[in-house]
Length: 310
Image (cartoon, rainbow, N blue to C red):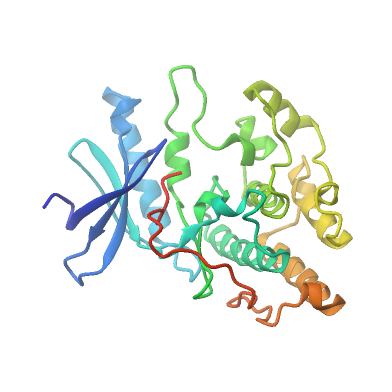
């Protein structure tokens, strides 16, 4: 049976732009782990490759310090067999990507609670000096029956940012990038909050706030055009929620919410108001940080997309 580090590889469970995702087992306790691999040598050689490997280990160690209930734990990292790899907690469930299209959208109250928990996780990470840089539905894993939310891929995004195509395009997910990140400028925690705002918009509306057929047009929209009000697509949403989302999508970072904690508190307050407004917004599951609304979505536990690659 092949191995990476101490981990015994069992199967490939995903493949994306940054590499392959493997299911493996830790012989120390017999538990499952997910291993993400990065083929740094595809874009670097010589001194540049050595620097990329050092940065990989540095960023992986930074991500390993994060200890939060709603953040997937990084367990180990290394380099061998021409690959750099990160071993992390095997998160049971599925990512939110399937809930970004009409016909698969989650109830509004549930979206708000999930977003609040992601905002809390970001507040913690930012307090530790760690940015995510790639907040998107595919990087949030949920087990709705168990009430679990897990934010994954801390460290992966910054490592990916260090890898550039030969045309110089930064690898990433442009639709979710803040204007300052897309422009290659200095970013802080408010950039992650912008990306969370894009994700919230997509989960509620089934579409992105900015969409274009070309990268240049998309970049222009993100940098210069105000996102349409969410109520353009979902008229029943309350004004307070529409205003909060618009605030996260402000072009200037200083006009966005100050931090993840404040954003989470605002989201939960809106959730309480929605529940109080009538049965349509009922959320009897509570509004505490560890809770999800009792309204749930059924899904197959056989779904292979644990710890997705994209």
